[in-house]
Image (cartoon, rainbow, N blue to C red; front, side, top):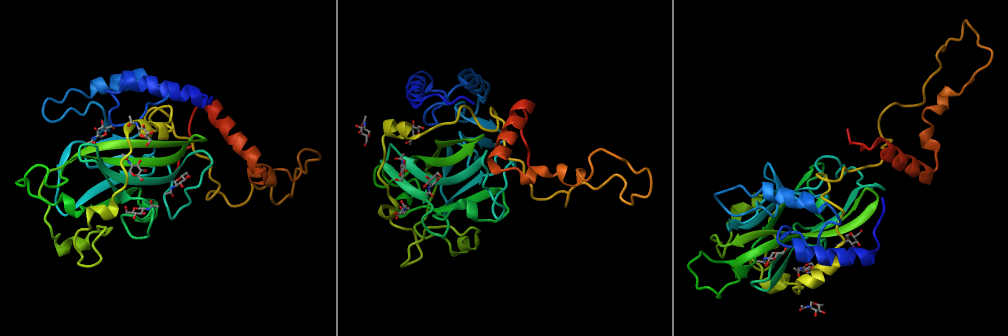
Length: 333
Ligand SMILES: *[C@@H]1O[C@H](CO)[C@@H](O)[C@H](O)[C@H]1NC(C)=O
Ligand SMILES: *[C@@H]1O[C@H](CO)[C@@H](O)[C@H](O)[C@H]1NC(C)=O
Ligand SMILES: *[C@@H]1O[C@H](CO)[C@@H](O)[C@H](O)[C@H]1NC(C)=O
Ligand SMILES: *[C@@H]1O[C@H](CO)[C@@H](O)[C@H](O)[C@H]1NC(C)=O
Ligand SMILES: *[C@@H]1O[C@H](CO)[C@@H](O)[C@H](O)[C@H]1NC(C)=O
């Protein structure tokens, strides 16, 4: 795959942002290519007469595709939210193609490096940490390492105290209003590393009580962060980050050339764990007749499984070449 120079990439990103910004409102920057496809998809999605215009999103059966390996299952864009905590569900397996911990996720072709999430609002000038891989306690913990074996990771983010309200409060007295769940993804796709930011708009307008019910603590993974002193909501300042402007955000991303999964087949390295133990045997194991004078004596036993003895770089090249020739992807059984 030809990688455009970073200069070209930034010029392209900037110019396409100006032209196509409306269509890709939720994604920062632009895919390097696939513009027509995005536009068409946008138009096709535009036929819901009731409810908000979700044409800027790729949604298939309630699954929101992102410019990364994650697929958002919940919430849906523009949902008014409240209650005890914010519940987010993300498929982190590239639609089932990639292994999740405790299996190894390391792969020279395609893998998740990490997900971090923030709750941001330009209107309110807020940027709250949802999950930033700082502690081992959810939701700040690395979401890849929770719910072992599950391809869907759940994040239960306790609303901080400045979002408390019931809709009757005066405008401007709280930080309630429109927000983005801002999902940052570091990942490798088909041998190249990318970093994308995807903004999922929600409204924090439903009722949020000052003291969340104790029963919520039975939820797994446990909602957080919680106030260490009284078990209630944390102060907003304690999870606040500086808000970056859109120019700086766009400059920070390195988007893939299209939507992984929908536009770009995910390639993974061939796995050697599992399958046949040992090499192929001989056609005539008892050797009691038809003694063959000549031919490949003793070859089959280690020939067929020889891929294991290849040196790593050669094997990688072979896999890439195989993928390129077949035009197909190795899928995870
Ligand atoms: C996420 O992954 C990227 C790429 O590997 C790495 O540079 C970054 O430090 C990671 N971030 C966290 C919070 O671990
Ligand atoms: C959410 O992000 C989009 C850009 O992706 C931005 O246009 C919009 O203003 C943001 N919404 C809020 C409430 O900040
Ligand atoms: C993660 O977020 C918490 C809460 O905002 C903050 O205290 C901590 O410094 C952050 N960690 C990093 C590495 O940014
Ligand atoms: C929010 O803060 C995090 C951590 O500092 C940063 O990576 C992210 O870009 C910020 N988001 C916005 C919209 O400013
Ligand atoms: C955006 O933020 C960057 C870095 O903080 C700053 O240099 C730049 O002037 C800002 N741009 C605008 C339009 O505010």
